[in-house]
Length: 324
Image 1: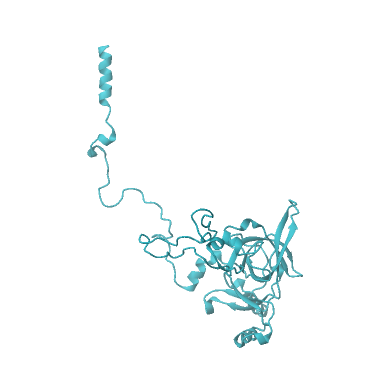
Image 2 (image 1 turned 90 degrees about the horizontal axis):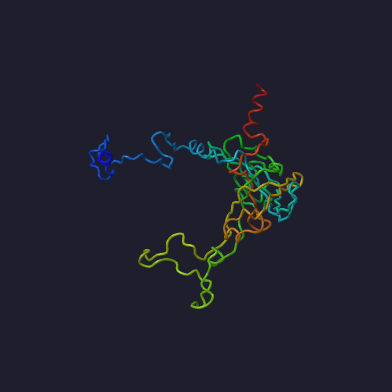
């Protein structure tokens, strides 16, 4: 019994104490002490570092950086006509839709990288009496041999391949059924609105302790602790609506090229904020009936595989190739 106890005691004596009780010299650490951290640096979330190429400051470098999100072709203009409904042939469900009609949409002019620093197509729609057009615009239309337009909008494109010939007509067939587009229009103007309507504030209590200030916004900031000022960007009463709103990833349900009608999916699942609900009418496109709508290919979806019309660069190269 005595021999067994002695072996047990010796085994306990050979065990090392906890690491925090051991001297610093016991650990072999090859790194020298300094002001720099010995831990592995975390990956930088910003797009900078010694291995990255230097960003250029020219127009060509800027266009190259924006090429991924710039559409390959121009968009089109339309007029919001109202709401309707169609039945899905696969599920049998009734889905709301918005009807957009295109009226004499035509290419008016070009913007090139050499002259303007970017590529864009100037598109006009509708018709306007020449007596209601200013003389500079009359000269602009006459130079390009295009009738005066009611609306004139630019659509940026990636390169010269997206420049359609001046005078080309863009119909409803420019879009195909099943593709996704981004719709831009001016929302309904609500005028001067309070905080509850404009931002969805809860308001003050409606019972005890409040007198004649049930719909006020309340405090607009701190006193001494916050600098005795109203911080920039504070949500307050003000002008509501009347600004451009973009609805992304709207699906094209039907296209009638003969009548110039594009039917867009109008589900209410795309609404996110209360202000978006109040500053737009029912459907996927903001604004009242009769407003101008800008339609372009969705930048967050794959580009549609659609045969493009002959661009200005291609039409200029065709006579040269035939004569050669």
